[in-house]
Image (cartoon, rainbow, N blue to C red):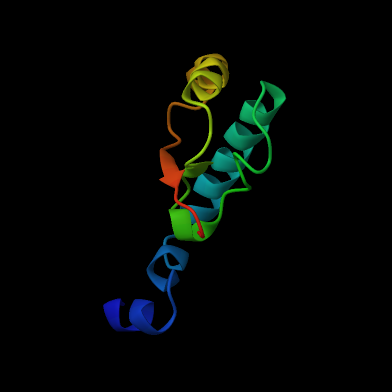
Length: 88
């Protein structure tokens, strides 16, 4: 699988049968975060390459994120959050 992943980035994640459920849960968290003050630019739709995690833009105001996450996190404790660097 490592060989495939080197040729097609994200291939290993696509092989994960739970990935579609994980990505859907991450999308639901992203929607919640947006409803609570963040923007699509700050919380883009999750992609399989992030393994079902929500990626937060690096320039997102930490206080705004904490407010939104405090509201949403209780329903989405199974979803990870990662920082989305510039250019990703």
